[in-house]
Image (cartoon, rainbow, N blue to C red; front, side, top):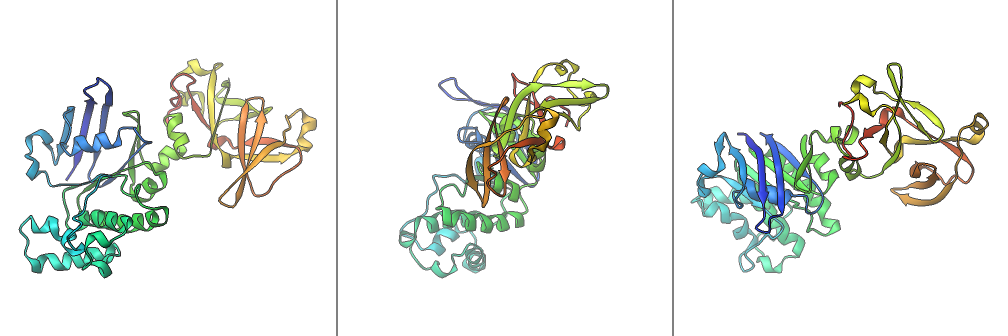
Length: 358
């Protein structure tokens, strides 16, 4: 069963455009990634048939508008979830199966199985009002995995959990989601979760698709600066793009760096000799002994340090702007900077879009 979204546009009554020409397709698990107000929730509401839009949403090849709501077989999890406070956890989990007319003998093994998967088995007979907020949210989430709906839509499902519970909830949900036979659309701000749960993703920014593909492509070959920066730890500076025969190069921190790309890889030769944005990750910057200074290479010192995951991130004030470097220890002396050419991305200074062919 395939989900297809074609040139979907959504405009609010105020005239503000929420989604612009959004397209995607999947027959498995797909992540919709973006910051708050990027359009993730609006997209899921359109797929669910809860908004009026232009464009097409095809569920199994049939237009959404032609499928009666009760026949769409879509399950939803939005942040404003609900549970029945005066019913037991078992009754809460069993509810979607009960209203579909299933018998108790069919319902119980399914509920028991999902309760075990989500760590709820020991509280099945508790009324929901006795549960913590994390447990209530887990009940609402687990309810989606009692049956194989054709389409399951999850809107930032771990966002409301406490920090301690969110990781465990995600792991349980990931295991359950990957067992489902239908389409799962997983909307999230969390890049790590998207990496873990989906082979394919759509990156949204202010209602526009900035990139579609694997999370690995987005990390190593971002189509826009905003995509690169979403993964964190990203430097960007402006310099001039030059060509020497069939090779491209930029000068960074007093060093000429030959790029892995060639002039043929550029979207336009007009970029040669022009200012471009050069992007690279903190981990792609190396500090080198200052002995190279005698060759005319620029030297620097760290102006401050931050700590992150047991490593130091040093700030360097350069002629191109501030640059951040990952280091294992605080380095007090002078050094030169070197950037790995394979990790460099080139972007247009106006559109912030990639200027190379991936």
